[in-house]
View 1 (tube, helix red, strand yellow):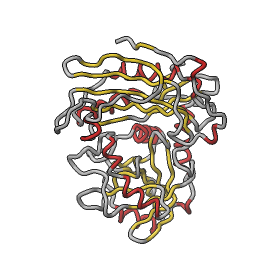
View 2 (cartoon, one colour; view 1 turned 180 degrees about the vertical axis):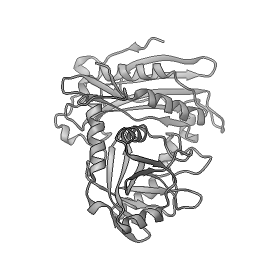
View 3 (cartoon, rainbow, N blue to C red; view 1 turned 90 degrees about the horizontal axis):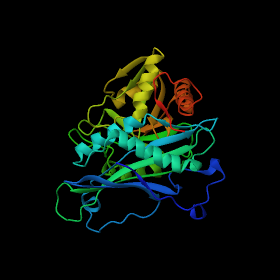
Length: 357
């Protein structure tokens, strides 16, 4: 399919932010967006790169009533020489199709997905920040648009991509965050949709996150739904523990999101000859390791924050301090190495970086 382009006239384009240090996250969007529609029996049609703006949607659209919606999170980076890069975009395309299959939605050709992302980034390349640590966040999403009530898989979908400049995801930046272990609420259960990047998973997490925020904690550390003792994820990210000389992270068992950054960290750690263990880890093992002084670091990973060190964990009325509440050397090394690859400042031995301009 050929992507039709309807560019915004120069005189109607929005003013770009001047202070990149004040970008925040997810509040500013570029001039254009990509849209494409799907109808059962017809397939995908009308791929369009046009002005950013409201979506036409019937009040009976199934996404509004039954939550048939999925999305991805990606970034574009500007190198020191002005080159523009994407980071492992085909992994996002693959994961979106995994989510689509689970949610009874239409799959998208992976190469076309990446091409649509590239075209949006290139037409709005002037919105990509110049400072390291800032980037263009890209949000591909798909919603069910069939105008009908009654629970059944939609026959119509809208795929769209929006983008905008962002700074740090957390207010703390790359400083350690404080996380709250939820004992009462869970994010996902075996057989559910925890491994999908579906909007409903995030909606279900909001109440526990609000409770954590009210207690002064940035994010929620989720436990498993069955025994309420095995660590799964933290907020919207995967979680890692450096216990002794082993880097431990929960396994991909269908209840947690298979993060692109999680996979990248594991590959980097292996290349550094670290001991990697993917296994279930009991929250009581975590607190015991803190008391015994063998838990050296805890950090989360995700596209938005890259690596986010954890300085405090609250569980059962006790706040545990990790590494004196400071960022650990491994988290810092991973963060710097991944950013250097993303911005074209380091050798990319894995072929993760895609130069598009």
